Amino acid sequence: MRTQRKFFRFLYYFFTAALLLIITIFIIPPESKITVFDVGFGAPILLLTFLALTLFFLFTFVFANIRRGILTSAFITGIFFLRLFGIRSIYQVIILLIIALLIEYLYKRGQA
Image (tube, rainbow, N blue to C red; front, side, top):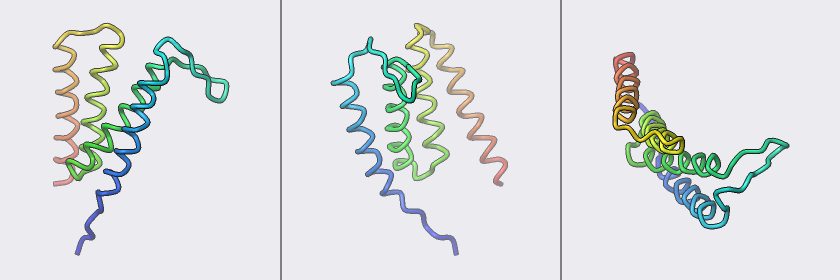
């Protein structure tokens, strides 16, 4: 008999990551440079990282599946990443959606 995974911990992780995301939005100015271990990066990269973590934990709890949580958060974060570089075409979004659906299809087909 399979053991049932407990996905309520992802709800708690989601609230923690959402709190970090909100703090990042309100405290860190967008033009600032952040240095961690002598590596500097901009605040939008930190924002996208916290957004990806927040979405991952949320969709993992909603779908009760880690793989679908990763795919959905990668898709939404990819849309925001494209918008960061000024790419606002619907065709790139459709390509990202097709890639995410293809990965899900291939994994599901490999398990059958």
